[in-house]
Length: 293
Image 1 (cartoon, rainbow, N blue to C red):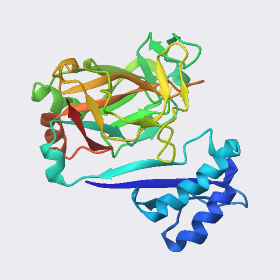
Image 2: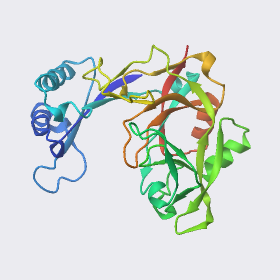
Image 3: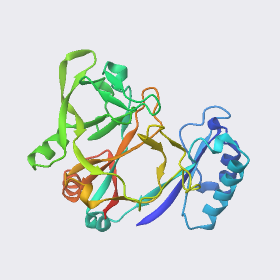
């Protein structure tokens, strides 16, 4: 496994000092994110090793500004870990964490899906109606997606067929309604409802604000539902808490949800499902090694 830290800075977030520092320090290694249309809108990122002198330079830069109370370096995370695995490492893992990379909008609530909000602090909600979406906005070249609400999972009929054909466990598939005509259901897309349970993250799992502050949780829901934090290590789960499903969600929720955004759980899948998804050429996700202890 190779581990990196992706450091991102944006002038829009008033992080112009960090943008300039990264460009001057790393030169062509600094990558522009998105289109830099007008002055003051530049966003850049760079990849560094967490055990390198370069990481330490950035850490000191960020720490100095957090120490003096600069909100632009404190409210939002500055970087995130990226772990790259060989095929052998992923195939040896007992379970893996599923990361969905394909996102789209509008979300269900914007298309008429009805929710009950259960928590005024983290925006935890319960879906009361069928999921209605603008089917034209679902990316056609991927097989698993999330809306911008972060807890509405959409899968292709190819994914559903694979899951049912092999008798996999831990999920139900609900029809997705066309928001323009709720009486019509999609033949190509289904809502993934994960019923499998992986339990809570084990204490061995390391959480923090970001790679530059591994001792701070940015925010906790006062009612204990969710935290605003990153995984700073691979995910560890208690073996006895996992119900042995092929796809499952952790009890832990992440994110200080608001407006349309809901807190989201981690998704883990079995080695069997991981291999089947790879063999079928499904797209829209990546995987990271997770552990049962």
